[in-house]
Amino acid sequence: MIDWWRRRRDARTLRDRAIPDALWRVTLGRYPFLLQRSADDVQRLRELSTLFLADKEFAGMQGLEVHDEMAVAIAAQACLPVLNLGLAWYDGFKGIVVHPDAVRARREHVDEIGVVHHYDEELAGEAMHGGPVMLSWRDVAESGVSAEWGYNVVVHEFVHVLDLRDGAADGVPALPDRPSRERWLVTLTGEYERFCAAVDAGDETLLDPYGAEAIDEFFAVAAEVFFVAPQDLLGEHPALYALLSGFFLQDPARGARESLAQ
Image 1 (tube, one colour):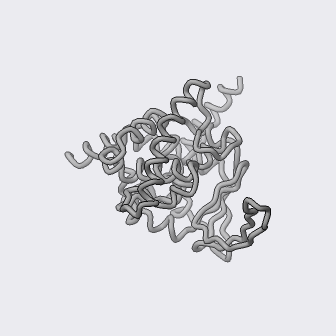
Image 2 (cartoon, one colour):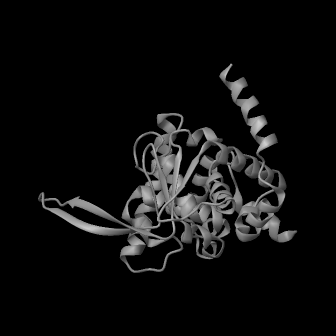
């Protein structure tokens, strides 16, 4: 009965509140990495974005007004990771807070001998268990260009949402069973350790060195490149690409090749 009601509600939303054609074309033009997939996938992304907009609540901070173009831009990028997983993966939160630019947050850290250290951290985004998700609009707006170096704040934060779905920020999304989790950790941990070694050695890396901060950040950083520069990730980290492809049920590198051939 609940599934029937939800399907009926979604059908009504798609009929009555569909993203206008002109606005969707503008969104695809500003964020061309969204087109690196089949026409059917792009249409499904539009439908998921419509349902996402109907379900989530946007709030602008510091006088920022979140207009339709901004909301659709965020929704389309947020729905990339769940294109084939489904919006139920985002059921655990409602709020999306948008700041004009990066914000400074006061942090506290207790070191190994118990001394408390306070510091400020600049954030372009942040995801918390149960929400909300915070985003810097400047970083969102520039993601069409920043895709060239594999940076996307929306994908990054919404992959954290997927990671947090099981209650822990550990780089492991909610997987169906223990063997799946163990296989995931074998690959992800190995890739993470090799990446940290490269960062420590001062090597130039495809992935943002910020990913060396912790394995959950590595997962989110890798997912950014997977979705916006997939061929680069496949070329340099094939095992990591295969891991993410298996979880997200997507092969964006193939879509990128096909879009270039058209």
